[in-house]
Image 1 (cartoon, rainbow, N blue to C red):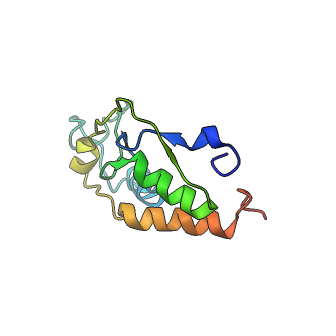
Image 2: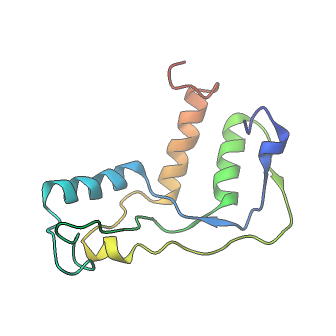
Length: 128
Protein backbone atom coordinates (compact mmCIF):
# COMPACT_ATOMS: atom_id res chain seq x y z
CA UNK A 1 0.00 0.00 0.00
CA UNK A 2 2.84 2.41 0.78
CA UNK A 3 4.15 2.04 -2.75
CA UNK A 4 0.79 2.28 -4.49
CA UNK A 5 -1.26 4.69 -2.34
CA UNK A 6 -0.01 8.15 -1.43
CA UNK A 7 -2.33 8.27 1.58
CA UNK A 8 -0.58 5.22 3.04
CA UNK A 9 2.72 7.17 3.03
CA UNK A 10 1.44 9.71 5.57
CA UNK A 11 2.98 9.39 9.01
CA UNK A 12 4.13 11.38 12.03
CA UNK A 13 7.92 10.91 12.00
CA UNK A 14 8.54 11.28 15.74
CA UNK A 15 5.94 8.71 16.79
CA UNK A 16 7.52 5.80 18.58
CA UNK A 17 6.48 2.19 18.45
CA UNK A 18 7.44 -1.05 20.10
CA UNK A 19 8.89 -3.79 17.96
CA UNK A 20 10.60 -7.12 18.36
CA UNK A 21 12.35 -9.28 15.80
CA UNK A 22 10.67 -12.61 15.22
CA UNK A 23 13.92 -14.44 16.09
CA UNK A 24 13.94 -12.81 19.52
CA UNK A 25 10.27 -13.54 20.09
CA UNK A 26 10.79 -17.17 19.11
CA UNK A 27 13.77 -17.45 21.48
CA UNK A 28 11.69 -16.38 24.48
CA UNK A 29 8.78 -18.60 23.46
CA UNK A 30 11.10 -21.60 23.08
CA UNK A 31 12.76 -20.90 26.43
CA UNK A 32 9.38 -20.80 28.19
CA UNK A 33 8.00 -23.85 26.35
CA UNK A 34 11.11 -25.93 26.98
CA UNK A 35 11.33 -25.04 30.66
CA UNK A 36 14.60 -23.10 30.34
CA UNK A 37 12.63 -20.30 31.93
CA UNK A 38 11.37 -22.08 35.02
CA UNK A 39 7.91 -21.43 36.40
CA UNK A 40 7.75 -19.44 39.58
CA UNK A 41 5.44 -18.11 42.26
CA UNK A 42 6.74 -14.62 41.33
CA UNK A 43 5.92 -13.40 37.82
CA UNK A 44 9.07 -11.28 37.92
CA UNK A 45 11.26 -14.37 37.77
CA UNK A 46 9.20 -16.73 35.60
CA UNK A 47 5.71 -17.65 34.43
CA UNK A 48 3.39 -18.44 37.33
CA UNK A 49 2.69 -22.17 37.46
CA UNK A 50 -0.88 -23.01 36.47
CA UNK A 51 -1.67 -19.42 35.53
CA UNK A 52 -1.53 -17.04 32.64
CA UNK A 53 1.39 -14.64 33.04
CA UNK A 54 1.41 -11.58 30.81
CA UNK A 55 4.81 -10.57 29.47
CA UNK A 56 5.81 -7.72 27.17
CA UNK A 57 8.55 -8.44 24.68
CA UNK A 58 10.06 -5.40 22.98
CA UNK A 59 13.43 -4.26 21.74
CA UNK A 60 14.59 -0.66 22.05
CA UNK A 61 12.00 1.78 20.74
CA UNK A 62 11.93 2.87 17.14
CA UNK A 63 10.29 5.79 15.42
CA UNK A 64 7.87 5.83 12.56
CA UNK A 65 10.58 7.74 10.66
CA UNK A 66 12.89 4.70 11.00
CA UNK A 67 10.26 2.39 9.55
CA UNK A 68 8.77 4.62 6.85
CA UNK A 69 12.12 5.79 5.51
CA UNK A 70 13.22 2.17 5.19
CA UNK A 71 10.04 1.01 3.49
CA UNK A 72 9.60 3.98 1.17
CA UNK A 73 13.24 3.85 0.04
CA UNK A 74 12.95 0.13 -0.66
CA UNK A 75 9.82 0.57 -2.80
CA UNK A 76 10.98 3.78 -4.52
CA UNK A 77 8.63 6.44 -3.13
CA UNK A 78 8.93 9.31 -0.63
CA UNK A 79 7.21 9.41 2.75
CA UNK A 80 4.75 12.20 3.52
CA UNK A 81 5.40 13.64 6.97
CA UNK A 82 2.46 14.98 8.94
CA UNK A 83 2.97 17.63 11.62
CA UNK A 84 0.82 16.64 14.57
CA UNK A 85 1.31 15.29 18.09
CA UNK A 86 2.60 11.74 18.28
CA UNK A 87 2.72 9.00 20.88
CA UNK A 88 6.31 8.72 22.08
CA UNK A 89 5.92 6.19 24.85
CA UNK A 90 7.74 2.96 25.34
CA UNK A 91 6.70 -0.62 26.00
CA UNK A 92 8.81 -1.95 28.86
CA UNK A 93 10.00 -5.54 28.78
CA UNK A 94 11.27 -5.74 32.34
CA UNK A 95 9.46 -8.98 33.11
CA UNK A 96 10.93 -10.73 30.05
CA UNK A 97 14.36 -9.42 30.97
CA UNK A 98 13.84 -10.71 34.51
CA UNK A 99 13.28 -14.12 32.95
CA UNK A 100 16.70 -13.88 31.29
CA UNK A 101 15.53 -12.66 27.87
CA UNK A 102 17.22 -9.86 25.97
CA UNK A 103 16.83 -8.88 22.32
CA UNK A 104 19.71 -9.93 20.08
CA UNK A 105 18.60 -8.24 16.86
CA UNK A 106 19.10 -4.49 16.82
CA UNK A 107 17.01 -1.99 14.88
CA UNK A 108 19.54 -1.46 12.08
CA UNK A 109 19.69 -5.20 11.32
CA UNK A 110 15.91 -5.53 11.48
CA UNK A 111 15.39 -2.60 9.11
CA UNK A 112 18.06 -3.94 6.74
CA UNK A 113 16.25 -7.29 6.64
CA UNK A 114 12.96 -5.51 5.99
CA UNK A 115 14.43 -3.49 3.12
CA UNK A 116 16.09 -6.56 1.62
CA UNK A 117 12.81 -8.47 1.72
CA UNK A 118 10.92 -5.63 0.06
CA UNK A 119 13.49 -5.36 -2.71
CA UNK A 120 13.52 -9.14 -3.22
CA UNK A 121 9.71 -9.29 -3.42
CA UNK A 122 8.63 -5.92 -4.84
CA UNK A 123 4.99 -6.90 -5.30
CA UNK A 124 4.70 -7.62 -1.57
CA UNK A 125 4.25 -11.36 -1.97
CA UNK A 126 6.95 -13.76 -0.76
CA UNK A 127 5.79 -16.24 -3.41
CA UNK A 128 6.78 -13.97 -6.33
